[in-house]
Length: 211
Image (tube, rainbow, N blue to C red):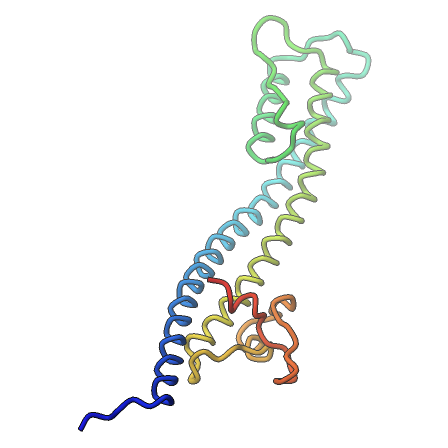
């Protein structure tokens, strides 16, 4: 004789079905987190690589600026040589390739190699504009690195909590801060909230309701 489902059996089946649906959802979230982390790490690598490039460019620019500054003294109406103009244009091109998001670099134009060459003070002014932009960009790179690193740490915190939810011996287990700290260094505090029943910090319910 077939067993008649009881209310307890029905409730258990409903709970298991709900948990299975939540796990499927968390797996989708986990894939999104892993993709985001991969892209962020690539972006961080590109941003870090710009640091040495910027240092090399600043060194070259400083030497060029000093020489033009000497030549400009008392020669305000003297045309720059072709070599100087080409050097200035190369620096403008390099600045545009390296420095992004700076309106003054975006506005900067190369000297047109036709007719009379620019006078030395004009070349000096262009070099000075670029010099100031490099100072700003150094700070921008540092802020950009810090921001990307912070977002990566947040994403890794989320990824770890999702992995615990999916793969724990007790499926559907909500990770505590201690659980996550056992897997990654310095998880993001803002993703945890205090649970009075557990008397500790658990991963935020905001994550657990994201679908």
